[in-house]
Image (cartoon, rainbow over all chains, first blue to last red; front, side, top):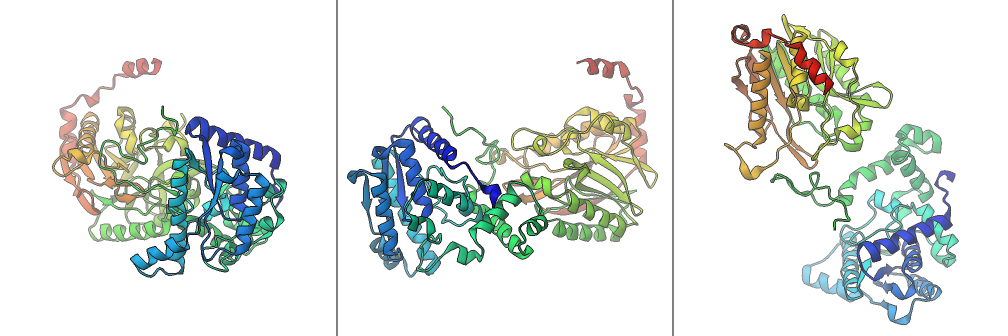
Length: 277
Length: 279
């Protein structure tokens, strides 16, 4: 849809500038740490981090599990090569043994729970790496996933900043093309790879082209579900499926609620800026 | 004249469920021969709607019209979002009765401090509002309403009293804070409200009906504790704290008479208001 067209060059420049300020001036850290999956979002995020902080200040971790296809690892390595990430700045840590150990100690996890567990183990590792490298954890979530709640709470959402959180999936793809990210990364269907064969579009039964258009028109242009159904020529039920998904996952985008007891508590009473010094 | 308060817990943004709740309290009020039933502020929509404020005016107005046409033999004050001009929303409450929407009251002071963000979503009333404002006669008693924050200033209640209201309705959504210093199990704000309501009652020699929301909503909790204060400054009826409740009270017109015999309400010193206008 052409209303989601962007000026890729300007957007990349802007995001890199913002990220540099956020990491080095606001948070006063030196480095950015990215968990690279071989997928679209983390590849674009790694590119923007390199543009913002330089390859010397970008640390990249491949954290595959048994459900990571070997092409993803190859693609991630190709990207590392393309970005010329120094050898001492990247590492592969296979998390399968850790996942199995947790399961062995805690008890059997079902498919979804095991997926969440993997995302959370990656979060634990990446935060430790950020700590030892004087860095921030650069999140890789995009706007479509954040709005749909298509992430693991305290897993891939457990990050310090989300530089591409303002870009819909289809826009991230355009940025990736502009950045000349390996074609295989751009063309593979988006998947969290929490279990073999999992794809986002398959679960939602809609293409990201349509999902993004629905999200944009409903939540940024304030159109009603009926209007969107007419404009996009999409069945009203499908439109509602997308908007309901946003509503149902609102809790995932909020901080945990604090029950109010004092004169002021954390939440609606507490509105200090992020920059508070 | 029997007044009832429906101290309800509305569900945020769920107008159909709120409508069902209104209906059940109205049925109960009718069974107890209530003449005027008062619901809290934004009773049909819930209070802390944030960006949903923009989405519910149509549905809440339809719900209001449904109540008005369905329950013709009782008067009610119901809270809703009023959109008289496209895209401009007013925090409002309407008196319904005899199949009609008799009068719409708009919130004058929109709190925008602490947790409150009404100035961000609602439109402030314009000058014309103060001229179209009217009382509604229910069983021969003149009734009018101001909304929540309006009671924290003397002028809105005074204006209603000066245009003839003997019964002032104050629907509210007052959230609880400061549980560290509960007074007889009630949040301290209940004492502040009680003082304000007694003051408004005495200075205007009018009955005050304060109908507060109760229950949880998003990250807030409303404490309830609705009250009726006589023109002589006595709390004559009060509802439970922290739970839904329904109370009734039969107004005593002699109390209004007594209050006015022993009050300077008869004097309206206009020069004070002229001076205030200059400030």
